Amino acid sequence: KSYSFCTLLINMGKITLSCRKGKGSIYTVNAHKRLGPAKLRRLDYAERNGFMRGVIKEIAHDPGRGAPLARVEFRNPYKYKRVKELFVAAEGMFTGQAVYCGKSAKLSIGNVIPLGNIPEGCIVCNVEAKNGDRSTLARASGDYCIIISHNLDTGRTRLKLPSGQKKSVPSSCRAMVGIVAGGGRIEKPVLKAGNSFFRFRAKRNAWPNVRGVARNPVEHPHGGGNHQHIGHPSTVSRDCPPGQKVGLIAARRTGRIRGGKKISGAWHPDE
Image (cartoon, rainbow, N blue to C red; front, side, top):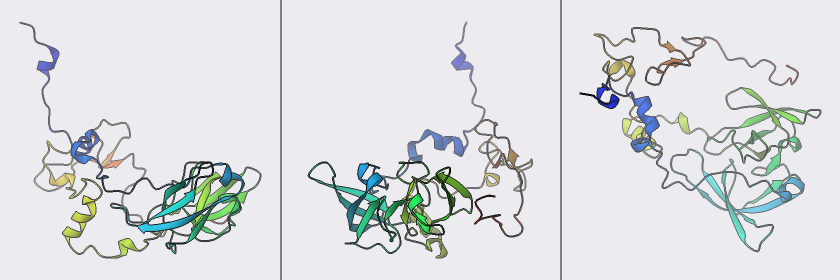
């Protein structure tokens, strides 16, 4: 009697939680109440050569996001109609404020200007990493980048990111002047589990988070044992298969980080 290959497959354990999240299903993002994608204006002729004037109509809360959003109304440069954009609001924005986007806009809170036109040492947010990507850096509440230097020969600008890392981007990339609103959000103590419950309910199914050592051996590589311990090195290879890839993935070092974090040559572009 012949058996197909599928009938001989044996279930060798449970699929770990990290692998189950890739399937989607109950682990999808709760986005049905969100206001929409928050981006800068699409880069057009008006911004490359002059400026576009917009008016802030509303400052709104976006579920699952710490920073407020600003709904800005612009005139369509080609048709007789209005265009509404969603920006991540900078601290100090208010309804009725005029916002200018473009090469010839002035250095003022909320204005969107190419990095090459902003002086060194200025604080910016909603920064583009590539020309025309409509902002990808420094968008969380209270975040900002510092412009370190401009290299006129290569046409690139050096930034200090919120993490402390330095990054070089094209000087034609745009940024909003100021810091993202909603700073200091994480300074308020959580106090009780119910606050975490409602916080993550707006985001996704990621809470509560059970530790691997608290599970059974069938559910997690760290599970099992008479005492809660991992039982083998917590570092795993970058190339290990899904299900085994838990813990400290491709770690260069482990343990506590002792001492302060130094950023060598933060204000020196040659280093």
